[in-house]
Structure formats: structure tokens, C-alpha cells
Image 1 (tube, rainbow, N blue to C red):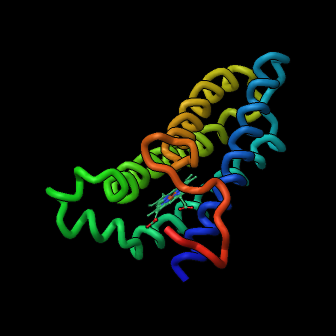
Image 2 (cartoon, rainbow, N blue to C red):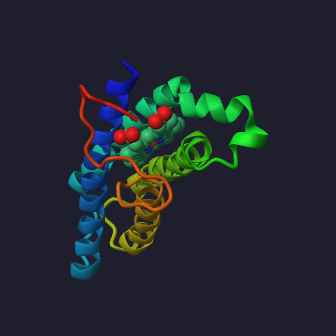
Amino acid sequence: MFSNLLAFHSLFRWLVIILLLITIALFTYKYFTKETFSIKNYRLLQITCWILNVQLVIGILLFSKSQLVYLLWDNFQETVKMRQPRFFGLEHPSMMLLGIILFNYFTFKVRNKINTTKAVTYFLKRFIIILIIILSSIPWSFSPLTNRPNFRDFYLTNL
Ligand code: HEM
């Protein structure tokens, strides 16, 4: 159960990233063409928000079952010095939570700015910051800090 959830969380990250990149590409396009932000564009933001919230729910489930998280919170003073428990029990969840809350908040705010051009610059900057927060908190396979496979097998999950 845990390993399949972990594999799903890992795979689902690609959908999160693709949607965030599409959102930013859309805002960048609007910025250069000076087009207004339409209700159709707003739907894309809502979909991205939903996908992020699904990832959040899976993350919370993993958090409540992870051995690394237990390890950290059982003996915080000692294990906070260890890279993996600190990353998965503290840094990763808090940064992702921050990114997801900000995305929800700004999506909510965009609602009042539909059909205006002024909003585009404002939101473009904020969504880029959110993308940076999320991308930098992913345990990429190439990360020197904490790494995990970029594509995890659903059946042979080994940590
Ligand atoms: C955009 C949001 C998120 C993305 C893209 C993301 C991505 C990832 C990735 C790629 C992994 C490694 C999976 C693997 O080992 O193959 C991971 C692990 C994990 N994530 Fe997230 N995550 C997100 C949000 C969250 C949130 C909000 C929480 C908790 C509240 C969370 C909790 C965890 C935990 C506990 C693990 C590791 C569990 C373990 O190995 O024991 N994640 N996440």
C-alpha cells in the first residue's frame, strides 16, 4: 500500500510540473501579446489547482505512514541531523505545503481579475516563484541533497 502510494506520488509529480509549466507559458504569452486573461484560461488554473491539491492529499497520507517521518519525530534532536528524515519529515512537506497554499490563494485572487491585462504581470511573477519553490523541493535523481528515482516502479519499490 505505502510503496504503491509512494510510486503514485512520484509519478504524479510529472503532471504537476507539466501543468505548472503550461500555466506559466500561458501567462508569459499573455504578457508579451498584452492579451487579457479569459475565463477559459482561468479554468486551466483551476485544473492545476485541483491536481496540486490531489498531490497534497497523497503527500499527507504518505506523511502519516512514512518510516522516515516517524524516525524524525520520534527522536527529533538526533534525527534532524540526518539528511533523509529531515528532508521528508520537514523540508519537503513544509515547502510543498507553502507552494500549494500560495497557488490556491493566487488562483482565488485571479478570479476577480478576469478580462484585465494588468493582472498578467502580477500573477506571472508569483507563479514563477511557486514553480521555483516546488521544483527545488523535489528529490530529483540528480539532486546532491536527497535523491530518489525520477520514475519509480509500482511493483518493485525499494527504498
Ligand atoms: C507539488 C507537491 C509535491 C510534489 C511534486 C512531491 C513530490 C515527491 C517526490 C518526487 C517524492 C519521492 C517519491 C519517491 O520516493 O519516488 C516525494 C516523497 C514524499 N513526499 Fe512529496 N511531493 C509533493 C507534496 C508533498 C506534500 C504536501 C507532502 C506532505 C504533506 C509530501 C510528503 C512526502 C513524503 C512523506 C515523501 C516520502 C515518504 C518516504 O519515502 O518515506 N509531499 N514527494
